[in-house]
Length: 525
Image (cartoon, rainbow, N blue to C red; front, side):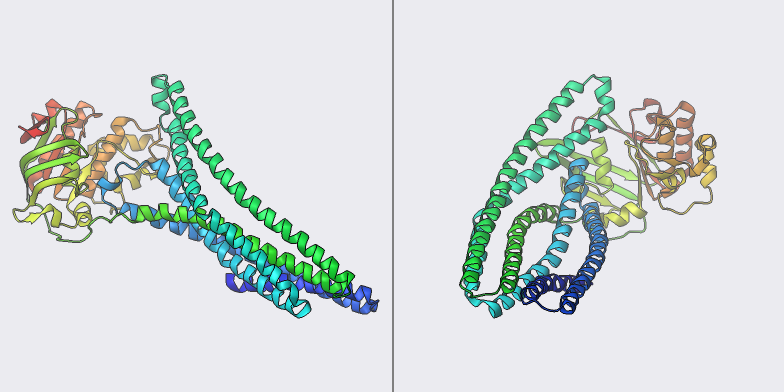
């Protein structure tokens, strides 16, 4: 539909100058008022159709642009969801959100504008050229020369526009990241009086983006100046040529009006393609940045899908990030029916171990992790494992924007003992205190929930999700003694068909577990 409306719009635009030329010739020839009115009515009808088609075309473009931009945005984000966690763990959310959104929007804008613009301007070059050829052919070589000047100017500036455009967009993304940090770190800023420090960081980021912006705008101005210079010179030459032809009676005033109007239309179209060249380089920058994200290989999402996990054997496991050795030659064994504790000082690799067992780190470790004595962890479909076999309660608790119910269930069906579990962990009183009960909206910025209440939510949703392996990372750090004891009692009562691993600094809790492994440095004791 966009193509059809675009072709109609371009045909209507090309017809207008021809009618104006006929109108002027009719005036000079002292045509009858009926003929003049006839031409005016046709022109009025033409303008009305142009407005109507333009309105429909604009609405259609907005609708397609909005949907397509969202589609590209979401496709890139969903692709990032499928990347290995050790590839995305260091991504800055502010930087990449701004980068993906801006790049996706510009790519879609370029495609839609080019799709309609190229058609309109090709028609605006070809049809006027045909009319000019029939009226006064000798002027066509001059038009061709003007178009070639635009081609040479674009070729000379193309590489410079791409390089400065890349630096400009990267500078914008980095500045947006620093700008976002002014709000995301506001608690830290207040607690440690870091306003001046963060202001300095923002000023440095601004200085960099200002430098790249000015450099980009310099090149863009030179580019647009070449456009204006070529256009002005051509207009002067064509006006002079037209005046000379009229003075020698080589062309009528009406035909000259048509020719000059069409020459102006051709030059305008040539300028469009010239500016399209700049937009092309800007869009190629966006395309390169999107392609960079899509060039990473997605997570291995096929492989073996065992019904359960009865044993996990870790053999000579070593983990390294860049030059930092996190774990070295670790050997462990876990079995179903036991609750294991993993203890140790901060930085000894406890959370890293959890991430490996959950299949989040697949490319940064050496050694073997064997399940059920015969299956390597690397052979298992990680998505299937995380969905059906393993449930992890992370140390950093994230609430999803939505109701408390949706945060507890996380898309799973409500189990029969759902409300009994809530009551057991003391969440029934929390729910009763909320304005809309379990349907109250919560998120990470909801101040109605304490740290302990959020931790209870994290524990319950881990239990509801289920699986034969339950992993908890510091699950009792914000719990009161009663809830901690209930948590441990629950696990003891349900461990028969479960393998439970708890990372904790809580000595009282660790003393009540079946086995405890202490991590010191990069080794196990």
